[in-house]
Every structure is written in structure tokens, then in C-alpha cells.
Length: 524
Image 1: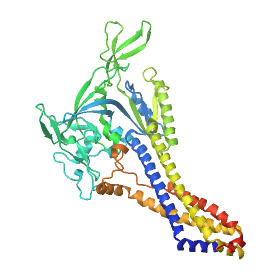
Image 2: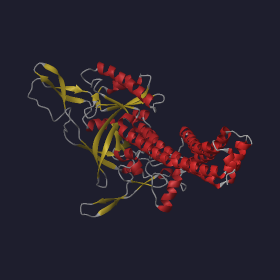
Image 3: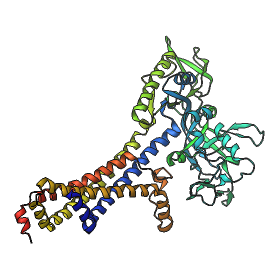
């Protein structure tokens, strides 16, 4: 009992123990804030990738594979699969309305099925919203107001179907949905919303003219793509002008700056992956199997050549799993199920599709392993450095307690003289260190929670008042700093604060415990 009484008295009456508690508090805040932000960044990276790509990807790039509808039907009968959708991915070049050229990754998708596998509907930016964003206190977001010739709801539906009504015929025509950062026609405000901006277009005579255009309403973009033959040779460049249906914002700056979504049938046509008549050639006089040749490679001097029906192809099938696929175990189980289903599909279409051993099947985490590993290693390195710095608290407590033991030598002698044992004296100083760890740890966890919860307003204030922009979305991909504290991480950091405080008190406690009571009473 006397240990608790002395601990409370010394903790509240001495300034040095309070400084030790402050050191534990600062170290706890520092480690937990870094771990929460970097861990949240990694979680957002993985989650956002799954938002636009799904959980598992089955891919045969460039040439693509046919009979994908059969594969999708087979996948959707698998218990671990929730939905599957076809997709084409290829490189392209954009000719923007202001005359600039911009490279992009083109994805051909079927709007409804793509939305079932991904969170496509949530990523469409231009749509009606009921209330302004949290930082938009003045309600200046254009989506809160009228659009003019068409409503926000119509623009949203255009994005879902990847179509827009022709100004000439009034009929829906294939359209594209670029990332909100692709064209440069939008200006992002600090409050988080986008405003269409006026661009300048250079005229043939060298002068410039203002281009006041809202792309999802009246903008068009010329897209250039190069279809490839079965051997990987570029056949010829194809170009087509598409109206813009909408723009998407996934929350990952890299995707929003590089990707353009196109209707699947339009992408198939431009890349010559659509159903058509193709030239069939036999590999030798004895046969050896047919080979489909793309236009541009035909030679009609072989009497064995003939035109055959070639089914439409896609380069990817993306899959959404059931249950928790965010964990490595869940995603790998889904991947194994997809590989098994594809094996059955390949056996049913042997010779027409890639074999089960050749096809590429990977999770989004597998595809972006390099970037994810880099973030994980960076997080581990930062934690190691900050925990190394936190050892200062251990040595600070040791130094403070060592000096306090020397200061209280006579008090220790009195306690030993009246019957206190070595274990009791050591327990007194250990409980003293535990109390400092408890106070510093509790205040540190609470302080870290307040910092992380308000980290975006703090960052915005630093930007406004001091011009300090630590979290640049062009570097860190995300527009918002992660602001959630994982309870498990908080528990580990709190336990570390307690352990560090106890470790700092051990050596002084042993010194006090084995102090000679006679010499201690004579200490001056």
C-alpha cells in the first residue's frame, strides 16, 4: 500500500516525473500518428485499387481471348464469385479540344457489368448531390446547382451507360468517361470539389482563343489507338472522335490522371477485337491447326486460305468475390477458384483460348505488389526510426529515477529500517515507472487520436497560413489524408509506452532495492 501512496505523492509533487510523462506522451503521439497515417494510406491504396479493378483479374493482353461470355457465366456460378465483367485495356493517345496531346490507358468496359464488379457508380464525379462537401461551407460546388441544357442526373446516367445523345440525330452514341484529372479541363478547389475552367486554344494564325467548354455536356475528344496482330505487330493507327459522357474520380490520383473508360464494343472495334470475318491460314501442307490473321497480314495466293468467323475478344475479365476479399487469405482463395474455373473453360475451348497454364490470373494486390511493398517497407522504416527515437524516453526515465533514488536515499533507508523488503522497495520504483507510462500512454493515445482525426483541417490550415503542403495528391495519389486510428495499433503503442517506462525504471529500482539501509540512513 505504501508504494501507491508514495507513487502518488512523488508523481504530483515533483516536476521531473511530469517531464518523463511528457516524453512518453510525445513519443506515443509520434509513433501512433505515423503508424495510423501510413497504415491508412496503404489500406486506401489497396481499397481504391479494388474499387476500379475488382478483386481478381484474368488477363491475356494485346491479342485477347474469345468466348469470354462463357467464362463469365462459369465464374458467376462459382460460390466464391459475386460478379464478373469483360474488359479491354490498351494504350491510347488523346487529342484534346484545346489542341494538346495526352497519352492515356484506355479501358473498354460494359457499364452495367463493370459497375457490378467495381464501385463505378460511386466514382462518377458529375452527378446530383444532396448536400455540399464538408469543407464547402459556402455551397459553391457546381453539382449543387443547375447545369443548363441537361440535368446532373442525365449526366450521371450517361456515365453509367457510356453514351451521350448525338446533337445531330438525338440518338445515344458511344462515349468515353476520362478520369477527372486526365484532360486538365477541371480545377480542383481546396474544399475538394471541381470547377470546369476556361482553357486557351491556339489558332492557326498564332493567336489564342478562349475555350469555355464543359466536357460532359458539349466536349468531344479524338482518340488514337493501335490494334495489334496476333504476333504483336501494330497493324495501323485507328482514330475516332468520342463525346464525353462523364468523368470519374476514384480517389487515387494515378488512376484519375491516366485512365479513360470507353464502351466495350467501341474499344473492340478500334482494336479489331470485334466479331468479324478473319483470314485463316494453315501452318503447313499437313495442317497443324488454323491461325487467325489480322487485316494487313493477308495473302491470298494460298488456295487453302479462307475467311472464317472470328468471335469477339477481350483482354481481361475482372472478378468480384463474395465475403472478405480484402485479406490476403480471402483474395488468394478467390484467385485459386478463378484459376480452377478457367481451367474448365480452357478445356472446353481447347485450341481457341490460352491454356490454363499460360493465362495470367492475379489479384489487384499481386498486380501492384511493387508499389504496395514499397509503402510497407517505408512504413516499417519510419516506425523503426521513430521507435528508436522513442528510446530517449527510456533513458530519460532511467536518468530521472537514478537521480531521484540518490535524492531519496535517506527515505529508502527509513523504509528499510521499519521493515520494508527489497522487493517492496523495487516494487515502489517499478510502480512509479508504471504510473508515468500510464499517464503518458493515455495522454499520448488521446493526443494521437485528436491529431489524426483532425489531420486534414490541420494540413489545410498549414497550407493557408504558412504555405506548407505536406500531403501533395500528385505525389501521394490521394486527395485526403487517412484520418482513422486502428484500435489494435493504439493498443500496441500504449503497451509499448508502458513497457518503455517500466524498462527505464528497472535499473534505478534494483539500485534502491539492494541499498544498504545503514549507509542509507547516514547519507547526507
